[in-house]
Image 1 (tube, rainbow, N blue to C red):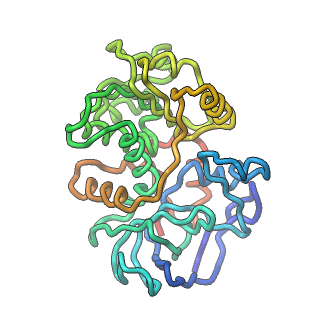
Image 2: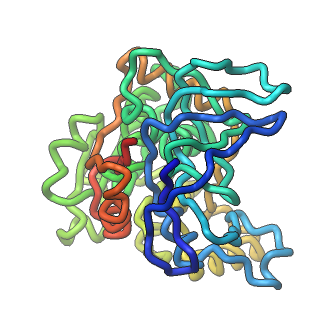
Image 3: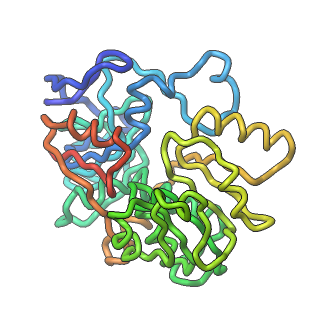
Length: 331
């Protein structure tokens, strides 16, 4: 089969011919139809998430990944089940599925991949690209909102939240889910995406390049019960905390080393103002997101799609930080 691989940290992506993997007793062999890229993919490639010996023994809320080369990146996929291990009972051969692959093994940018238990069935006639972004970006959005007490279809508390980078891969799902939960959403994005983010359900939208956007102040004067910061490669800012209610908090989706340091400092002084999100492998959450897409309650905004032999272009687009929605590689 064909697979995209790199052979060292920081190494270029190359299209290679490799054997089709064989599923073990708890594995699922998936013929990949679409793979979704995320910032964590290029962070692994750059060695940013390589575990320092000292830090690897600490209970940090971020995944350390030491690659075994050659490494095939990508962990979000949608495709068809080709074979299953003897212990697998949740899916069967021929099912159309959505899967989160193991970060340590990767494997998404390939014609076939090994999936494990974080796999759920999607409709047989559905386009894979519409579902490939759900295991990481979609479930991240869902779990963050559940962590602040959100309940969907308007049955929860009416909280005020701020979502930064609301037109990005995670942000687009956050806005739509927050709308379903009846939350008041202030969102930031670039000027070209303001209408899109408003159409997804944001009550107020700020252009992040304007003075108002940089101050993150709600146009209606509301303080935030929660700020969900999806901006990659940014450090903690006092501006975030200044806009919180007395019991509000900031949730960091893509923390930097500086943010992690501040996280531990705040823990030492018993402050709950800053949290760092860590995705949990929960198949029920993935099934919930699939059902929302099935019924049309949410949709996946696609930034761009690429063929497997153009994966390097998709990679560069992901690293740019300017994608609107999800970047998809189709097989």
